[in-house]
Image (cartoon, rainbow over all chains, first blue to last red; front, side, top):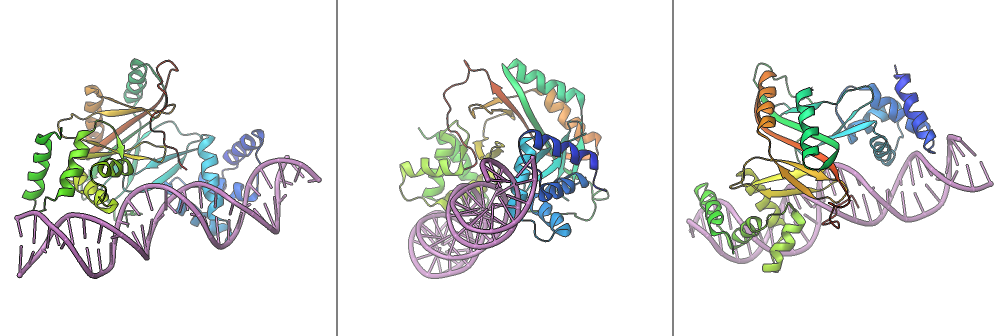
Length: 154
Length: 154
DNA sequence: ATTGATGCAAAAGATTTGCAAACTG
DNA sequence: CAGTTTGCAAATCTTTTGCATCAAT
């Protein structure tokens, strides 16, 4: 299941922008839209290599930049030294709660908050072009699942 | 003018915590509290070296970690690859608007926003231990000063 | 005296880049 | 075919670390 729709949308956008559509780009795009996780560049590379042993790390980084520039991908700094990504197509804007106990990332959306953000920027005479809210939290022990994908500075 | 007050507060806290108070630590602390800018590790090193040619980069990084751990310093990822710091003593919590045109960082505070953040975390069954809101904006040309301290990925 | 802090240089981690070869449109 | 993209390895950048030495308590 490669979410053909999204892949095609990306393919067309890149081609329309004069860029080329290669097997690697298709693979990376498929993997990006095939996961619902917040992945790191390295994890993305690993996932891609599971399907094609010889995808280059550089190609993944380059495609990551392209996808982000085209607005298909959003990056999230988890505050513990890790930079993770999530695909954007078809998702409404949302913010994140990041658990400092188990590194779990929970998404949430709050219209009031969004409205207030826009208003604040406006009030300061700026044009809002992006925003990012992170709530660092600690979950209660019962709720907290056995750590998944830990990442701390080495 | 070395803001003696803040320096002493830091000195005492570190000593009380069993750490030592050295000339380097005093210098770094003085510089940190002597600026109102959002500085990078490298800029801090440069500012320190202006006063003492031979402060080590490692010492600056180590002190940065200490100050942050003690809550005297907050770090801010500007989203363009740069990590910057600001001292915290005597400042109320605030968020940031980061201009994508000139890299200027504007601080702002909004009680409603703060309240809502806390409430959202609570509603999700989490204990809020930290939060960070960044609004990426573009300022109008007249307002936008000639770029100051640009920083883009090399 | 002890034990933590410093400085240096080397190490590490993550991302970027130069370049020749391969491939897309 | 012309111009992009890829893969590889080497280069960068930022931050961390090992260790001998120095100095604060």
